[in-house]
Every structure is written in structure tokens, then in C-alpha cells.
Length: 173
Image 1: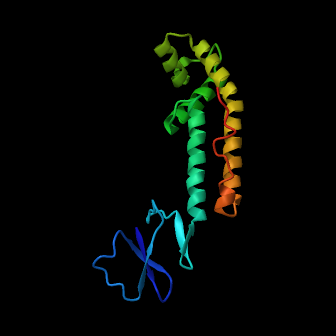
Image 2: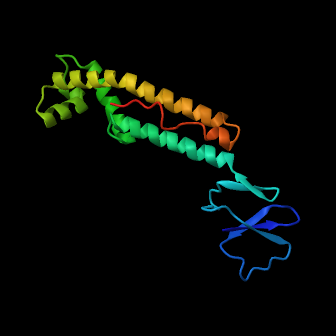
Image 3: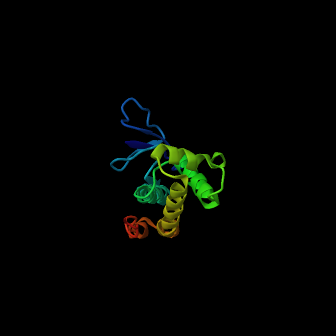
């Protein structure tokens, strides 16, 4: 990939795979680094030299940390925001369940009890136990995720960013 730079201003005016057939009057053609993506440039041109784009690198590393956090959560939970809503609703129902309650007022617990052939009280107890067990694990994942994101945001340059180990600190089952 080649960056086309306005000689008068030094601004990048475009990118091209080849300068063949391009009038380069007033334009300098500068070879971009390997694997350069002009849509999300990992490098920027400063005073004629390519340097790593810290904003891009931070964004990419933060995305990696958030994806790793989701991978860690999925070791314990079913993925997806709809499933998260289901978990929250089931927990609320399970914590409110009493032996004299009307199952019609507890649709998620009643549906699971029917689907599994279990007494609704057993389903409620299991849901509460799982929700309670999740607290420590979920908190550890979130603490690690936020710590890494804050460290990424605080990095002053690519070499400092490279010292952050986004794979460390995740709880395992």
C-alpha cells in the first residue's frame, strides 16, 4: 500500500496499491508498512516516517481484552445478551419464590421446571446457588478486564502498551 502525501501540507490525501497512471505532481508517494490497512491505520505518517498509531493500538488491545473477558464469562455462562436477560429474570424469580407462590407468577421457573421435570422449588434453589457462585467469578473477570483497560488507556506509547499482558489474570474453572 502506498500513501499519497501532499508535498505542500504533508497531509495524507489517499492510499493506492500502485502509483501507475497517477499524476504525482505535488504529491509524494510513501510506501506504507506491511499489512497496512487504510481504513483502520495501525501506523500514521509523521514527518515522513511511519510510526505506530497509539490510538488504533489501544482500541485494538481494548477490543482484545473485552473479547477475552467474554471468553472467560462463557466458561461459566451461555453467551449472548438475551441469555443474560434470562439469567437476571430467573434469578429475580428464584429469590422471590416461596412454596405457596402461584407458578403462573414465575414463568421462567415454571417453564424450566416443566422442561426438566423438576419441582419448581428445586429449580429456584439451583438458580439461586448458581447466581451466588457466579458473583465471585464475574467480579474477578470484571476487575481484571477494567484493570487491563485502564492500563491500556494510560499507556503513553506503543512500547509501554506492549508490556501489558492481556492474557493474564483471568479466572479459570
